Image (cartoon, rainbow, N blue to C red; front, side, top):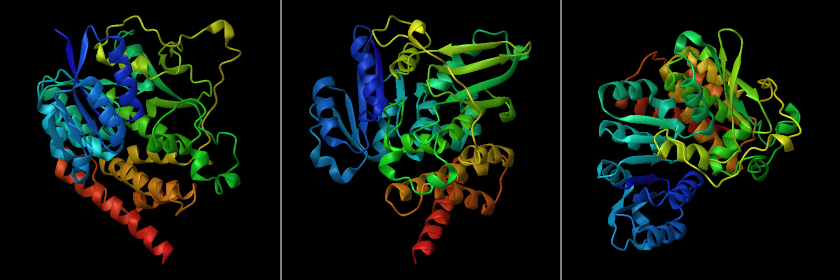
Length: 384
């Protein structure tokens, strides 16, 4: 039987790449459900082509714009959760931001195979997700290229005894060579010009601030159950090495791949089995160099703030994520400077009520709402 795959965020960059992978492997895979957050025009085209059993639009007020056809008509977060509970085999969570958390928890509680591209789920609720994975028959396979790389490398070594450090790589974003002073005047449209990847608005901006790498360090801490001081970050502009494992004897194992998200997506959908892919290959003979450097946390302080949040505890991770969501949206709207994003995250972290360990979903959302309100108030006061 074909694997039945539900895609949350089907019109985003990861969702579209997932459908391309299914197209290449349509003899073994089929689309069970599609969920869209905003791009209704593309969503209609996807429904017409793939004829899913379930289709869900996040905004119920726009339901009349969707040609559901024979698909079960679903809307809102409740609709997404209903679709996750349905008869699919694999759930791909490619939703951007905190909205992805509830569908992640729903998939795990229902014992699904979860191909997770929504890093905010683990940032907000890593401890709770770990508990659910231990208590259910659910499986989580990371889709982020860096975490997929580390996931695969860790299967090549003989357990934690051989491991010294994990290494995440970062392209450095479009402002890698800008001075601290120059960063104050960058414009939103400049932040959208990522040098390597074509991604959605939020993750592209997060990559420009290095907040994305901070989120990935937090994600790796929970995915691999590793102290965050053993997770390193290196700037690697070529984006060929996606992750490395440093061993006890000082040796390094590196995962190299063409920067194409369809490769880790295929790995996840095939549950770790490798299959022939027609996508871009790495040609070592044509590579002039592979360079690495230490991140400059003076110019890009969000990465250091992520490590600080990990030192503080679970509540700080929730605040880090929520403050970034609000501040990033404000920057894209032209209300604050690029450098204000990290400043507002820092302020929220400084003023929040610290809770070291959290497994209660209600507490997670209470802290999330507090952090969003705090940053919104700071923005309102600065405008007033």
